[in-house]
Amino acid sequence: MNKIIALYQNEMIKISKKISLVVILALMICGVVGLAGLMKFQQSQQERYRNEQGREPDWAAEEMKYQLDMFHEQEDSLTAQIDAMDPDADDDRLFGLEEELRYVRRQISQIELAMEYDVGLYDEQSFLNDVINLLPDLWAEEQRLQALPPELRPADWAEQVAVVQQEESAYREVLESRDFHDYIELVRQGLPRSGMTDAMILIEQERLDLWYTLDPSGGMSGDMDYNQVRMVLDQRVSLRRSMLERIDYTSSQGPVPMTPDRYAELENQLAVLDYRIENNVLSSSSYEQSFSDMAVSSMAGFGMFMVVMMMLILAGGAISQEMATGSIKSLIIAPVRRWKIFTAKVLSLVSVSLIATILLYLVMILTHGLMFGFSSGQPYIFASHGQAGALSFAIYQLASLLVRWISVLVFIALALMLSVVTRNTAAAVGISMAIFFGHQLIGSFLMFLPRSEWVKFIPFEHFSLLPRFFPFADSGGSFITGAMSQTPRTTLLFSLLYLLVLLICMGYTALDSFSRRDIK
Image 1 (cartoon, rainbow, N blue to C red):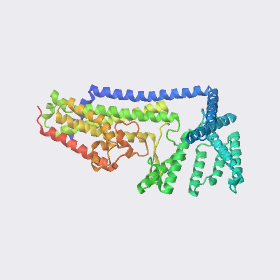
Image 2: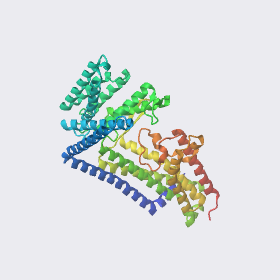
Image 3: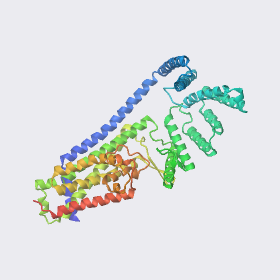
Image 4: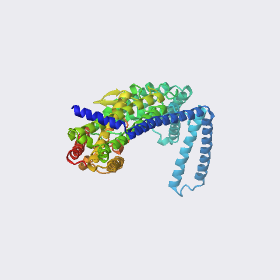
């Protein structure tokens, strides 16, 4: 053991004197800081643009006037075309023109209503925009009821007209008062008449309650991203409905029957979403947060890319370069067994890669904190068996880098094996780099193959560990996880065992070749 430790120390000293190590680490630090600075610059440019818009309050009103004039011209043109047509000449074309005219008139109604109540259609988003979009539909419904001939009117026709008129009046009062609570109550009162089932009405009531809790102003204060809040609430409705009806409405293929495993996944997704809502942790809920998240993703991806490049160079020349220069002979003629020399080299490479990963983590956290604030990082929210929890931003970033580091070990083993077998540094580094850059392309190709059993035994299938360790977070920005991170075909345990076997095989091949072959 003492000899291994002494050899390990010797290897660490030799590696620390390599100029390539210092250069790549310097490039990694500069690149990480530069990417964060670029994101911060883009954020400042976005803030400047928003502030310039805020200093020009008339631009939205001018835009609405322009749009209104344009729609009036379209209305006149469509009306003239319809009047000039023979009603019996082309029913399909006439129907299309009438549909287009109805759309144009609806747009005119919305803009005129927005101008009447001073609601910005293009410079702001709030519940008032929803009211503006809803009122033309109520007017169209009233016109449809009024146009019914007396002999076709149902028994409750007068009641239906009264209800529609009452809703019109109530929503106009909301536009005047700009009270979000009144709007919520008005929508709630209309749920029983919506034709929904009792269960769906309950889900919609939950959505309204959460909406008011998250954003009591309904987007009027600007503290919350209105569209983000609506998207989160709509996602929750979809999850609740899927679990209620046992039909997956979240699938990209449309509503499909739900398996027990899929039900458990959606249960965890709902728990995560509820945790975010309750703790007001909405991912990328503002443009400031989105730049912060992109900065973290870019820094981690670029940093790990540089770590891999550095380790491929070091591992690719760890033995072959010493053989070429003859410096390995001083170790071989010493009373030390070759496996101990090999073990010391492996431990030194693993240590350097781990130190570089930790250095990347420290630079990331410090740079992100200085540029975006030490409290701006998003925690990782997860769930198991329907119970949600959270990891702090710092712990999650460290854990995610260590997970990516597992893939780095595979490429270290590959480059070291090639270094021993080929005894040529250029070949070892070149081939390992080609495999590293090509594995993402191959992984993308494998995505189009059917889910055959043989695909599971291709190494590139198992590099996407990050989304498997952290399924409730985006993998964004990793140069190592690659294209296979979207739809893993194997379990996490299988992938870890496969990579372990792969490491053992490559390590044994390298050790056997190093121990048996003569060194000239």
